[in-house]
Length: 197
Image 1 (cartoon, one colour):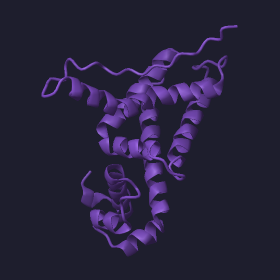
Image 2 (tube, helix red, strand yellow; image 1 turned 135 degrees about the horizontal axis):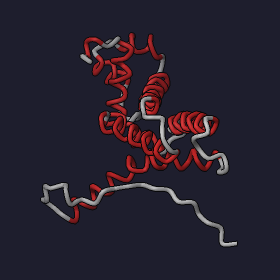
Image 3 (cartoon, helix red, strand yellow; image 1 turned 90 degrees about the vertical axis):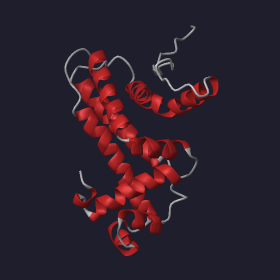
């Protein structure tokens, strides 16, 4: 979509998403967001009020991308096939939106009292999806719901957070090596810890 086709409110939100992802929320001023969006600070305040309002809109936008990706994943097959299709849909969405990846890495990994709201929103989305799958009979009801939610989020977000570490190690071990084909593939899985009793 052409940037000119977006509403001023959407342009502000997208500019904030980009800037928060690259400079962090604390390193981004309202004036910088307005400038990047091509609007006045007054219009930014009119639409969002404060930087907290902008952050909330950015977070909702990120969660909407996750929800959209999941909603368009194939919903047929075994529980494992459905879970894999959803994980793949989320991975494709993240590949297509590096600005979301950048934002999430900062928002979820940097310390701060207000930074856990995105995690809560993603957890709530995942809970709704897990409950729907359980009610539809395509997810186990013998396991705890909370366990399924955490496992789903680790599968979908694990690579997001570990990939920079893998890339840094690869660069350190193979300086100047331009081919990516030998780089180890990162695959995050979750295993249940078995009780010893």
